[in-house]
Image (cartoon, rainbow, N blue to C red; front, side):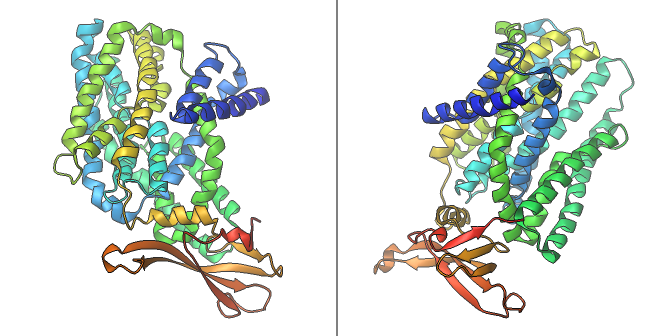
Length: 491
């Protein structure tokens, strides 16, 4: 398995670099490397790696969803809440309905088999969509109307809705008695319980982090460990009560951000570094799950059915956006963002075959084909349109994030050492400021982001804030913080 990890790292990074050089999303290169290195082409992955592939992919998905939670601001969620709920169900229903209707005509399968296939195809891929949305949020794109937050929140709930429908159709195929209304009731129950099991530990963690001065790496690992436990709780409760644990993962980040932005932002930065490795695991291993030989069995009719489903899905997505402040190009961006498929299709595509569904092999082939067709096209479309459509925002709060990264500024709670005299200081307060800079012309005022840090000198036998403190203001044109100070990354 050690060689498999080396292959994932080296070939994955190489593919990421090459695809970014030609202005394409790096994740496409990682998916292709996974397909080629997987057991269905060159077979470079060890059987042990493939056996634990699902666990690695889940942990990688947890990392990116935690980062998503640390970016979910309450005011933005309030603005997009209604539209997000519509997007979490309506587009999937349109796609499932289209596949159910056209499936028997194109493939000669029964309507219930077509409904099962539609439910598999109806899920958008958080593995593809969430990282791209977070990248836009990191750069302050679309912040004014909250478009990345809207897509991020809706795509996370979309999977819960679709998987419940999939279980209903699969149960109906087996001829057993399925209480459809009881199954549908699982959707709000699953969402509510998922959010609750995230909010409660998230609040407890916030109180612990406030009381005990743990270093950022420890905090991040504790949050990651709790998040992994949430997915274990979901598995243990399976068959008794439905829990959408991945929503709980996002809720942990949300509540910590709500209660303490400095703590949330520090952990978000640590997760961003961890994501470099987690991203490789996620996309290369998703690619390794793709049986390209099976995908070829889908044929022309299978590919046509996928396209028809996407067409109707796009209609459903557009209808959800009627009445919103989004312009036509922003609506087109949202429609394209709902195209990629990967994680859910790779996870449940083979379930009908194992369950004994007559056309299970065909359903698996089309599920795999949907990944090959939509993940690259959707990712390219999201990046292409996002750069041209999403606004920058004159006073976007993400300008401060850009400033922090450019100047390498520390966060509240981090310790620093003065390079001049070697004295130790701790960041105990920060403020985000907008400085009006009009260059002497009142009619051309341009707000400039700035961050004020308050540093307390350690080793003076006094509580933070009561001994010697200094204030430093950092603006975009200033030299990096690390020119005069060294950030101490200890535990």
